[in-house]
Amino acid sequence: MSPAAVLPATPDRAHHLPAAGLAVVVTAAAAGLPALLDGVGALAAVLVLQLALVLSWVMVARMRGATASLVVGTGAAVAADLVLVLPERPELGGLLGVLAVGFLVSVAQQMLRTPRTHLVASLAGAALLLTAVAALAALLLLGRSDEGRLVLTALVAGSALVVGHLVDQVLPRPVVAEGVPRGLAGVVLAVLAGAGVAWVARGTADLGSLRSLLLGAVVAGVVALGAVAVSFLVVEAADEGSAEDTSPWALTVVQVVLPLAAAAPVALGLLTVL
Image (tube, rainbow, N blue to C red; front, side):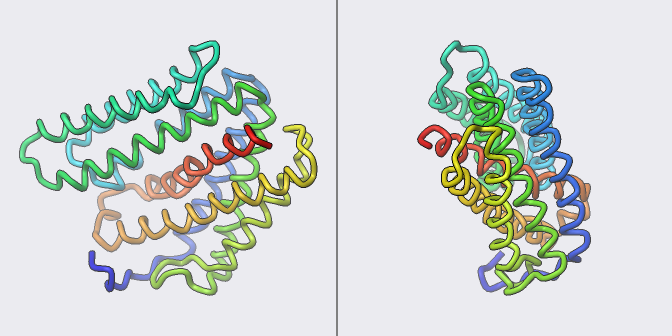
């Protein structure tokens, strides 16, 4: 699609309310399971998010060789989790090997299929998917060091997603991009909501007032901006006609899980240095 193309309007209700509702469910699972079941709960929550993203992204991106792409994405998700769960002292750098092997397998899978139409687009989709499932695995390091840090991150990210979508449901102004029902007011209020939730729940991660506000604002900012970018992708997918072949819930899952994946390494880095 050319840069000058104007994207069609997306019904705000269909775009925002399902995503806000799913964000509540995801937040409850990501914060509740680790609090109840410790490491097992964290692994279960992260794995479910990864597998949901794999299935949804393959559909939304219309990746060629869909069945093989599902297998590669699922394998990468499991491998990324094992790299951070099995070692006694896991390191985030271990995910680089998973990404390297996963991308090589994706290249081989795409090159072996016939006909090799939309090869570059499918490889780009595979690269984004592998990066996202690896980023979600970073949540396991938060849960491993302290379940409270994972709970706090989930609450901040979830609140930013919910507030951003609900505000844009009512007032998507000033418009961020033509044809995308997202506004600057939603981004600002999402950041404020994330900072407020982090301050209120700071005791779960044993953070002081200033550190909790900084963590909440930064993580919520990444989530809010990521949500705007994903909304653009979803609207663009509808413009290209893929929405007719894709379950609306696949689009909703992508809207919720991709911003969370973007925020996970950021939260881990901040909580490591704070």
